[in-house]
Length: 339
Ligand SMILES: [Zn+2]
Image (cartoon, rainbow, N blue to C red; front, side, top):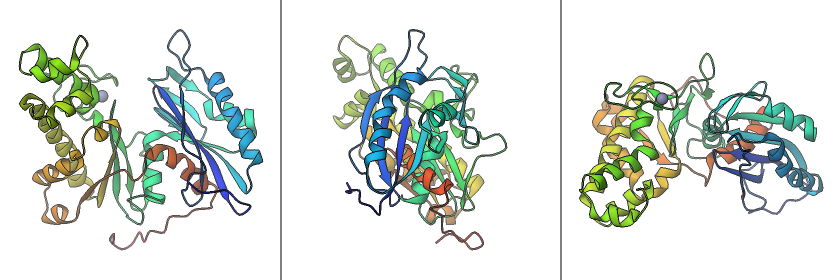
C-alpha cells in the first residue's frame, strides 16, 4: 500500500464480475492506496444487474477521489463480457443480463470524469503488459481459467482485438461437438465446456455418481461436488480426482500449445479462480504444454506463469486509464525479437 501525496497520479479501478464487484484506487506505478474493496453485484428480480445501483455503490469512491491529494485521472471499468471500448457500451454480458447497455456513458455522465471501459480479459492483459509478468515482451497471451475459459492477445507490442473486438476467444474453439454439451456461446463442445471450472465440478460429480470416489462423495456431503473439492481430493491422494485434474491439464496444454504454434508467443500468463485451487497447476500445465509444441525454440523459450496481481483485470482497469490518457507508453521494440 502507498500513501497518496500531492505528487500522486491515480485512478479508480472497478472490476465487475458475474457476482462480485471489486474497487480500488491505484496509482501510476501500479500501487494500491487502500485495500481492494468488494461488493456484490446488485441484481434485480429478473437476474439483470442493476446499473443504477452499481453507480450508487461508486458514489462514495468518487467523493474520496475528490478529497485525496494528487491528480485523479478517471475511472477504469473492467466488465465480464463484450464491451465496445470506444463507446463504453456493454454489447453482450450474459452473466449480467446486459445487451447494448451504454454503461460507460452512464458512469461518465453521472460523475463527469473520463471513463475507460473494456472487457475484463483485455484489462488483465493490459495490467500484465504495463506492470506485470509480460512487461517488455512483444508477444503474449493472457488466459483465464475460472467460470469460463478464454483470454486476450498482445501481439507485436500491442493489445490485439481483431476485426470485431472478439480476438482471444480460444475457449470457444471446438474440441468435440459430437460428444460435447451446448456452451454458453451457443456452439457445442467448446473447450470451455470441457475445461472451465464447472466442467471440473461436473466430472467430480460424475465420479461420485459412478461410485469411483468415496472421498469426493464425503466432501460433497448432501450437496453437489464443487470445483475446489476436486483439487482438495487430489491433494489428499484420491485417484479419481487426480485423473480429472490430469485430463484438464491436458486440455489446457493442447489449447495453449495451439496458440503458441500459431502465434509464436513468448509467454502465457494464466489467472482465474481455478488456478488458485492448486499450488502446482501452472507448473503442470507448463510441463504438459511442451508435449504439443511444434518447435524446439518454443519448447525452450515459452514461459507459462501465474498472473502478477491478486486480480489482474482490476489493475488493468487502472493501467488502461493511464495508457489511454497518454501517461504510460509501453516501451517495446517492435522490429527486433523479444528479450
Ligand atoms: Zn463456446
